[in-house]
Length: 277
Image (cartoon, rainbow, N blue to C red):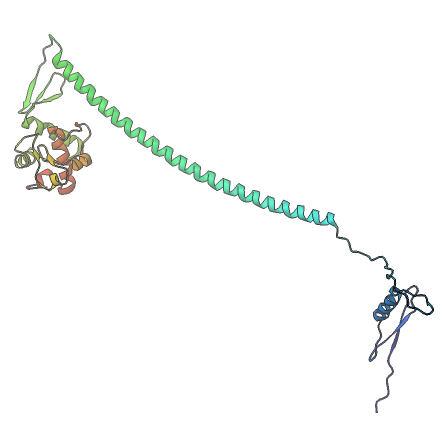
């Protein structure tokens, strides 16, 4: 048989007023905590004086001061302030970044708008300058022809056009003159076409009448009747009008040049048109 082992004993120093407690390991162990608890319980039960012959009501137990763990409010406040500072700094940084992105986008949009505005102003200025130059040339021609007592030498160049003393062409106000003026404008703008091509299509479309109007075909039914020497509808005239000519669908030269410009884009030249176009 194994030798019997006695439990080891451990002495625990006694608290003031409480005897030392011996803790025994193993079965039947008594701990210092248990002993202290029992001692505390014994202290909380008041000793009642003995009274002969009758019971005495128990008086309220005397309570001893209780140690309360106080929270350090200062530490909590400091921690809260630190968190708030960190959060505020993060929000401020995000706001600064967002503001920078928005400012960059606004600057780009403003720059694009400014460039578009400058380009449009340049285009309008160029058109106005060209129109002013044309008007000035026309006024000079008119003044030289109408000045009293001034003899204007006119040299005939060909049928339908003459040249005045200043070298400007003067076109006759008839079909031949309209075609020749249209050809000169077409040549200036690089629009292909010949006298024969224009004349052939004019005779088929309007018989040479600049006021001709078609009020029965599909274009007329759609509200855009064909008008003029080459029977041009208003949307086509608007799209292919050539600068330097009147913005008038009934003007014979403007009608011819716009029609030739349209035919050049669609068929290569008005000379290639031999029927409705």
